[in-house]
Length: 584
Image (cartoon, rainbow, N blue to C red; front, top):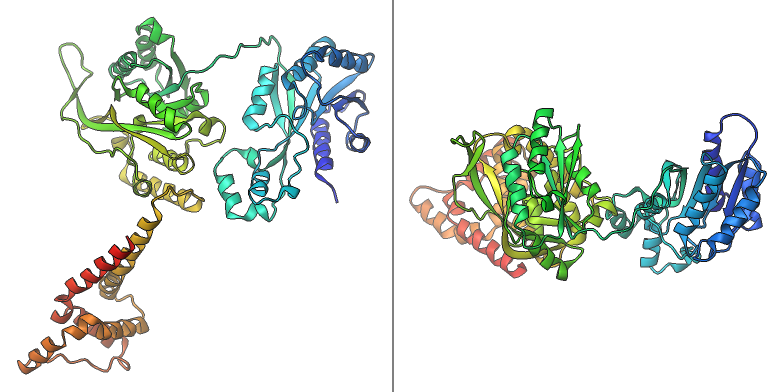
């Protein structure tokens, strides 16, 4: 049976074979902590002759780069090297970036066009996490790894070392018993990143010419992502004015121009250009074309440098405490979604002597949005405009939670629900922003038809329904209460709706008649029916056990319309409330 090590080496051979030009010649230098069996596998699965360089696990450590460079030069001298393979070194060596810089320096001296293939085991995968959670340590082969890489961290390492990503031929994990459990599905669902089921990263890299290592700088606390299609220059000015008044200036701004016409783009650039220098220096403008409403959000979140990222569209207003409130919340709730309070205000466009594009408030502040989010209510409908929330950037950039680009409406609700489930929310009662509600003119509510909103709503619910979710505390009793209330009321709905539509099966009608006649409501009203009998209004119940379907339908309708049943509804309602109170 082929083991994982051999499968990895097979993939390396396939990747190099796909790059071969068909001309013979050239060797492959394999660098790694290699044992004789691994060397034999490389000889078997690579079509080209191989040279090996056995390196110690502290390769790349400060003070040893010179020694590594000398070994590489000595091994490559007078050789026609077509590719270098670094096999499972980066996860073990003390200085992975120094190791790669050394490789780059030698490639620069010999031949920058040499193919470089790197293999790195992935220890940030669902199989490892699940086995550790279940205490199955014997199933986890962690070796002695100094460096643990996920997809993002590995790509950052390549880029900071002067290499460009070319191609991937990663080896995926096999499905195991542990991977079928609910815990495993939950872990996999906590990240949309493909690397959750990757056993080993196998990447081809290219030498990056004219590379200058950028000094690392700490990003701001908050990245503000502003979508615009360029048709609201006045409101965009107001957005930047609001940001210039923030009591905390620890933020950056990414304005994403989405399908902006050339004339409108100039208006956007003019707004940026005429901003004060200190605020202009915080702004990056990124023009994009194609895609729906989610596309600019994905571009903006991907480019974010802040620890948190928030959505501030080009027609909304934030108060001076907006950024500072998020910062204060992060001190106790870092890693959670941070939430302040939005108020809604209705606006209309008006023409004045100064401008034909002026917007004016035509209502006071409307408190539509709660101070604290209720997860169950959020499952029913969105309670949060995007500008009252700040999301951990790592959720997008590391865990791979992205905006669904198939959605042109409800894209924010879909994203909030998925992130809320794994991060939770830290809330403040502070009002920090005004959500503009346009009475007239273009908005997402007017651009998209009602049937599109309904279709997207159902789609989002189906996505959430298919996922494993972490339920916030305090919701189990509420769910039981709702189920109890539903069960108590569903029989009434079952009787009134299905019977009226004549859709009940014959035996179901017969069972329903039995339940009515044996119910407490029917029994306690027996004296009323006796009295009615003396008055000539006797209630006659036919033999329902032998009645036909048509006879049963008439009987059920008559029973539900009797005074005995209608007048005792309060009794059934009282019992339902009492039972619900016991549960709730």
